[in-house]
Image (cartoon, rainbow, N blue to C red; front, side):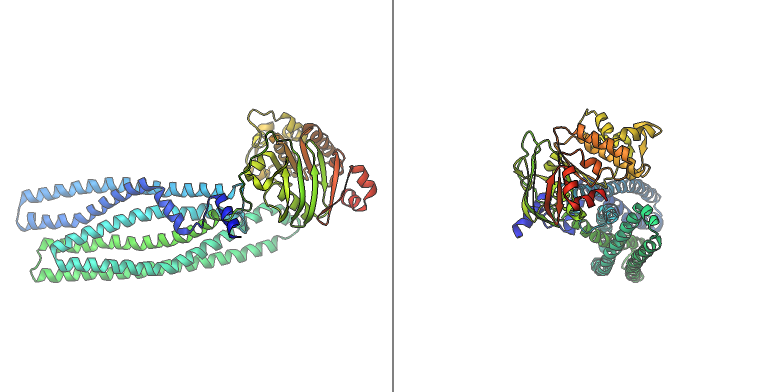
Length: 575
């Protein structure tokens, strides 16, 4: 069992991936921008810390000693520092934003690649809206960790420069800063722990709410048709309320953390100012040094408050990284084999003793070039068969072969270049009608025959711009029957050696259904085709029909023979 799990993980390229791994790769992947941003940010904070120091020097040299040259020199030095501050802030912020956005983009790309990987498994137990939330909001939060790292380096530089200057002014002042700063950072880290937990819960609830909302929008017509709007709204209201509560808890944790850290920071700065003032009254430091010390104390408010923001960003980033790692590190639904497809693929399909879902020791032989119908009165049998043929799942026992090669020994991506399973509820993409049909077609392939065989040419003829008409998301601008014909045309245009089609004509009229049946027979001549359907028009053009009952083959004959001899077949097909 452990070995199988290791193989499955290696198939998707993720071995015990953790949130820490995601954070580390996010930062190291943007090493150049993070380094540039950190360098410029450190220079900016060093310059900010030098401003009160230069003002103190100007006071001591130019004012206390009435040195006009020293005064002008100090003012010129301040001008140079301010020019440097402007330059470093502008380009440092640009590098930080670029690092954050690029890291988020790369994470989104990895997530989409993992979700769409042939091995599957990443979407197990997750709604589409939840996956969308992870690929957007969570990726953005992890990407923002790059900016937090840059700000942390800059803030630490400001603190170190301030500490060095204060030590030169007074050892006591320097010690106060050097000892007090780590204590504040430690307190901020402790306060970030509740925020991290609540941020994770917040994102989890928000993802669930997004997922339910996406499902409700997608099924709006169905909900209205069955009068279930009130139940659906109540379900979403409850989920949304839970999401709101989680968000408020995270906001309260964030507010408490920021408030406490800010209060402690104020106390710390007041202590620095108090020690500096006492030293000035005792004559241990000059007036200019006192001004520098007080100015540095005020300046320290910035870097120290930044650490409160940094802890908050890191806490949220860790929570989001854990969720991302859960998707990227998910086990594949099937294993990736090292075998190769036979060349050329003839299209012989064999199932031996297949048990999966409701299937029980199913045996089935399909010769190359056969047009076979499959009737399964229990829709669960049809679903299980489609999953095994598409290799979205592997049988619990038994085997599925293509030209004598076990599918389990092949890479799932290779299997799908040879066996295309066109599901009943296939969605269309946003774009033109012909663009949808060409999506899986070989380069320079003529899609005209596929359009004609599926009846999609008639659909194009009724549209304002014909095949160039824009189809909206999921094909919602088309009727159900039009969507089915375009989806079937897309499957036919792929021209794979084996095509498995599930109920391709349930939403079309009888005349169109008969045309599709004849078109399928002609365009797939000498190519292996499996029609999983209960349509008499489609079944009548097949070479033979396989009847599956109770997970096993209950009969195999021509359509007319099964209608005559099998009561269960007549009930499933003619009722």
